[in-house]
Image (tube, rainbow, N blue to C red; front, side):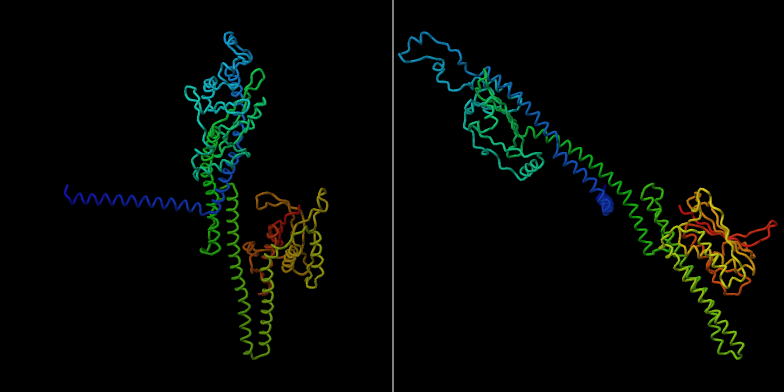
Length: 601
């Protein structure tokens, strides 16, 4: 291979390595970006803190209130007491000097001068102790060494005879002066001091401090003092490093005579190692639980915070009006609060857009309806100065007067329709007796001066026996429900001939509600004897500003009455519809309007 080829190969290899490094950096950047996006949500952080915080509190409670520690110490105390009784019995049986029976040599007795005496004590070379350390050393070593327990034997006066730490492998006693307390201790590091303080924090109670008195008198230990009186005693202490030390003192006695005391104590850290291993096991379980809880919290936060964030962003876009009609994300397939919230926001947004479109359409219709009389009024006003005859001027003044009345009627109806929604939303519905309401409307309509000879009758179906007087009560606003009936009656009278009759009927009826279930209600029926309603106008008559009155002059009606009536009925949870009454041969006998309202419970 040539030098150029080798150089190209090296350059290609370097380029591939740089490209691989860039890809790794991009993956890491995307990973940390995804993590940052996850944790940017305060809801995610709160879920993590609450779940992990609960585990931490549980862990601290286990570490602080761990019953294993108290049980372990109690078991250790009982074990030391049993071990101490066994060792004390062995020491008393094999290591005490027998002074109750004396062996006397007759030859030595004859060699004594007058006034001298002979006994076992003189033959032993002035033995001072009731317990022989040389004889109990091997016994003590064999019994204590396997248990990692420190044993000390004190005589009846509290002086130290033997310490298991001073025994050699051959059970010989090492005799040397013990160093001062703490002299051979290394200075504790910061970590050791922190760990010692932490162990003290997690200690379930305040234990007395243990101090090694060395070769000093053993009566300084309360348990030794009690043992020399013949009572076995145990005490739990902690040393300067925070390690638990259990001490048990047992009397060494023979023939009920106390010859000394045996003090057994655990090595510093023996119990703490067992407790530490147990706590470490708990901590490992905590780490695994925390990891699982972390993943579950992330998943839970993702199923809550993610959809909530998308819903909030969509609602913000609706507020800013970025698009003409913004769709809210659909989570209605979820059977939880997120799904309910998504459905509610979607319905609210749909109703909002429908309301905006209705307002825009209403504004356009108002502008159109107001423009017609204004155009006619302006033409009449501009033509009036040019009129030459009194007849022309009178005709123009009639047009001006008619257009002014038409404008006044339109403005009044438009004002009433515009504030209807707000009034219905703020109104407090109360139980309303339709019998009294319809009776009052009938009396007022028959007493009106401009009734054109058209009478109004009222037919009320008898109530059911089980219901008595509660048959025709509804929840609603009396003035607005009265406006519905008044509009229908006036509309029927306008289509009736002189001497005609408008009939109002009231009865119970069931209807299919919006939720698909049948609901009990009340029907108000208004019939007239007019020409009826054209088939193409059955629904159009409820539109704003629509009128179909061939026998009435132009501009005599605003076309808002039936629209307002439907708006009021739907605001009360009811419906209004129109139909024609027909005879046996199919001929039209008149128009019929039916208003259904839900009955009060």
